[in-house]
Length: 110
View 1 (cartoon, one colour):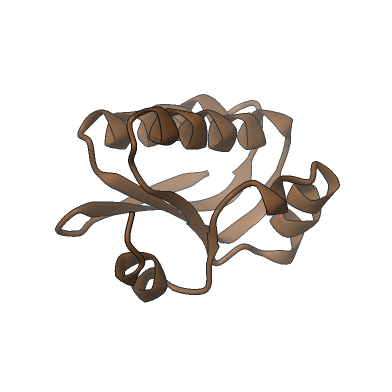
View 2: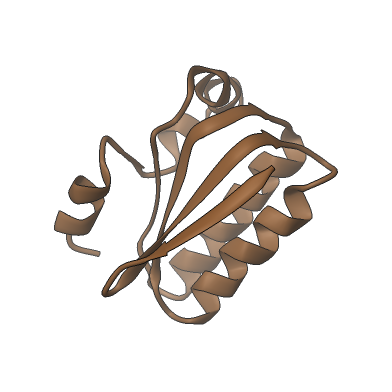
């Protein structure tokens, strides 16, 4: 798994690539929580994720819960079919804020 970060004025985009599974989900979790510790809004780009398991989903859930506690905006963008099927199975597609683009996330008020 590769992790890219792009800093915006008041938000950060974390792009995950490859498989997000037990072997690398701690790295994804740490990256997510590190951004939220800076009190910046967070958008996670999942367009290049080919596989995600329950540990990867747990990292997303923890990030979402942490953002809510800190009144920060959190969202997902570019969700691949593989990831969406897992989110739908867990009914998390109704929980996570999902955006069509970075611009949509940026435009929406927190």
